[in-house]
Image (cartoon, rainbow, N blue to C red):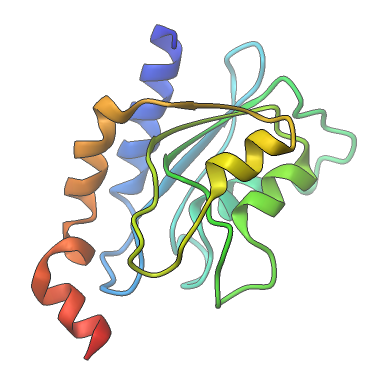
Length: 158
């Protein structure tokens, strides 16, 4: 871990606060930084569409740049990239792999509330360097209190 990793992951958490608090989805932020430390894109859950995830939003901003090499880039995300989802055909983990992102840094692994994800393991199996900074996970849990509090969970289940 470097000071830059901590800074950019904190920025992803800050971006996650822009996501609307909806009881059946996490508020996640993502920041993609190139190998030289320049921001390429950001995104948050529901930014342009209610079903879009943060990583999906950030990667979509780069779609218009053919030939962009993301192998030296780092995707900072407040929550583990998904490997299962009902709302879209491609998971965030698949989108990250298809984009060729070389490194992912996250604060909190996705709890088993909506889906059983194994994003960290999947990315590592495919050669992506993954770094977890669990000391920032409490901030991500606080941003997602709308999902984690018992009343919110009853609304989802009931």
